[in-house]
Amino acid sequence: MSKNKSAVNTEELPLIVTAEALTVVLESRALEDDPSQTGLKVAITGSTMNDYTYALELLPLAEVEENDVTYSQGEHDELTVVVPADSIAAMKGATLDVAGSNAGGLVIRNPNTPDPLAGLDLEAHGELPDKVRHVIDQAVNPSLASHGGYVTLLGVDDNKVYVTMGGGCQGCAASAMTLKDGIRTIIMDALPEITDIVDATDHSAGENPFYT
Image (cartoon, rainbow, N blue to C red):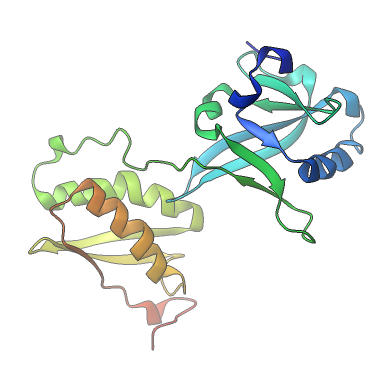
């Protein structure tokens, strides 16, 4: 059931819109056919290794779905915000703000981060290499897919995991950080017995090589 501002505790709102962001949204909404009957819908569409991905759209309030939560933002309730029911829990405490003083774009600052290991069942996957492969397939690669990248398991030796990085991750200057902050964290959190993750990729063969 949709809710208006009076039915929602302000402290429990899934997303707060700052005054600066409100100005940007209202300027865009003014170009719509019926601004007063147009709301801002904000939904979580997926996740990367450390962040959620979002979709923001202006839509007629008549198109709000039954389970969406709606509430007003602004000193004079100028804007109706719409959040799908399945995005609420992961968005609690988030703020829609401007990206920078001169940028004019919008950014969502969310204190919540996705758990790529949620629902992952490793007990049914036998030996350690099979468990590692399962973590890569189910938790690592779905996160990398948004950047056009993927990881392939080469093997496990003495509790060290050897991988190669392909697609957008091969030759990417950020691949070392991706390995350290993303891939290593996910695999070693899921399988504490793993002692290290080794990148065996020939990054010099990538489209944007940074190894020489």
